[in-house]
Length: 257
Ligand code: UGA
Ligand code: MN
Image (cartoon, rainbow, N blue to C red; front, side):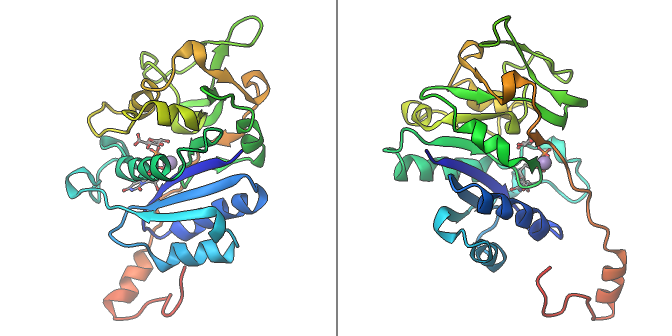
């Protein structure tokens, strides 16, 4: 079974650091195929070189599509006012549907570039049954130490969620909390991401086309283990770099950082 991890990514000072962390995960998990989609008009050498250096170019697909300006965050915008990764994830789904519609056993996971993932998470995903969506806890998200599915007495079915933030959402979980059996995307071609959703509804928007709460498959030790954390990297402060640049100098001349 192949796990197709779909990662939207955009250029910023910490991009290479984030992607280097992820690329080393791919080196450790042979069943992973990386669909990395740059929010850009071109594919960049930074990403191409990174895939080569990790030796995973044969297990990756480098795509690009720019978020239209009207949906792009501006300098001082708080990051939550517009959905992120919509265009990029949809391009990856189009690619998957056209190239891999025979691979009904594949698993699809939306893997943001800044979270922290355990290798063990991907071993759990391999347990996802055809026609189902696997779910598990996510650490450090939604204002809680952990957001998690709540299970019935015999621990086989999801009966609710512990979310504190917008618990009324149909699926009050983070993008990192689930992975999807590939056959569901083939069966439901209408399942795509949309800009036309309220804040926090991207996950519900894709899942409502594919599954119901009752059909979710609980993983990660009956949803007791945390194998992924919604970490966020602080914005890099470059005041001295900007001062250098005003003098026509820079610290990273001829270097890729
Ligand atoms: C949360 C969820 O974890 C995301 O999966 C979801 O897309 C997002 O909210 C949302 O509601 O849109 P958060 O940490 O707030 O995530 O979002 P980011 O990590 O900033 O962005 C998610 C992904 O989109 C990342 O892989 C990031 O590199 C990418 N992105 C972000 C772009 O490709 N372009 C951008 O302009 C911004
Ligand atoms: Mn993030």
